[in-house]
Image (cartoon, rainbow, N blue to C red; front, side, top):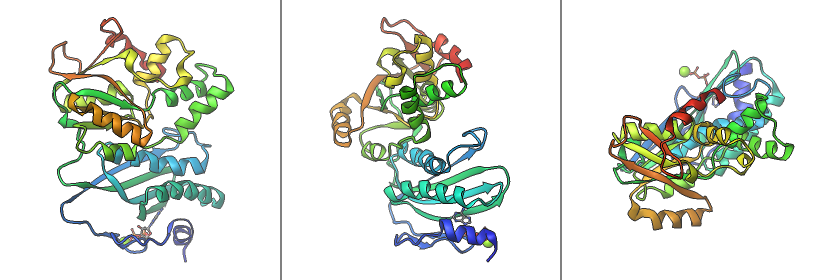
Length: 323
Ligand code: ADP
Ligand code: MG
């Protein structure tokens, strides 16, 4: 067996009893069986060394995160994760690294019952690409273009932790050790809101996961839906680690910080009770932060106002230097 096949066999070829996997790892293609009335939601995401993670990043956490960011894309459509493919570009074969990476990857894969059905392995600068397949009842996916005027805008969890950790790494800020540990854990081990996304099918109209920052990602929903999003800064849930920051830095992290993997979604106001119940059942906080409206306040797709209703969008946009 060549080293490449030995590597695949040793670290990634795990038996699956999933009846949807007709043929898994080992052939030219995997074969998957999908049911009538079910749509496949498909997404792919790459993590590159030096761009998405530090070159010395912990391999187990990388294995986890490479899958988590893809699960998050499925969550944002309300899809149920089923199958995954993994493309690895490695500078060399290092058993300790592969062992740790696959441990992190499969820990999360098992939790969501996703089967690894194939991939690719090549030599080169470290990069990890994951393609994920999920299932949706036909026609029910939470699309970006389906927000309605008058919808509430909601966000899950609390924002800003990952970018706060990054500010500390970049020595733009010095955090107390306990705060750094907490926000660094959010950056390295993000929670994909898979169960929330699934529960929102039929309750929410549109959704997106926050990977580039709340304002930027909500802007995609607004643009695709031909609407304007109006959010109140003081309603945006902020991670506790942000409490002692300067106000402008706090806003930068919570409103413009990426790598969050929380869901931002819109829903009719008649769905408020249902959404609150979903949140309580799942133990995932959700917060109402604004409203979708027709373009009534200029051209910006997202308007941010302060507690007094003053438009503070331009200053929020100006925080890009923290990125
Ligand atoms: P081919 O040359 O036909 O593209 P490969 O020799 O690259 O196939 O791969 C052999 C089998 O191993 C295929 O089923 C492929 O999907 C799988 N595979 C390759 N790399 C990985 C990986 N990192 N994780 C999981 N499966 C992999
Ligand atoms: Mg082939």
